[in-house]
Image (tube, rainbow, N blue to C red; front, side):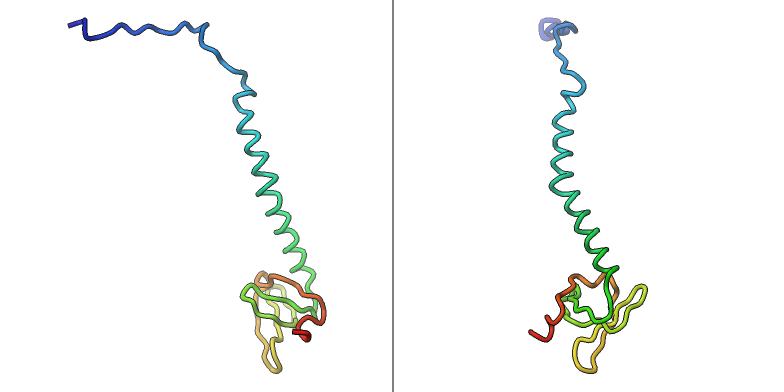
Length: 110
């Protein structure tokens, strides 16, 4: 019955090759660096610019909301902005809904 089972030979521990600790983590470190410079850093930079733009809003600024509505700021609050989008038509939106600040005179030109 023992002729069906082959003997297992253990590998000599000295013959097994091991790479250095840093060399085995090098591809992981390079991958993280690529993700940081191509994805994480630009995204955080855009978020910071958006936050600064929202904080710098003033009455009279012309903006576009995330829904695509163009309007001129009539009133500002801590959390809300009142936009004039047409004669006698004003809407109130949250500050984070403002996606872009336009140059002065853009709405009158369109």
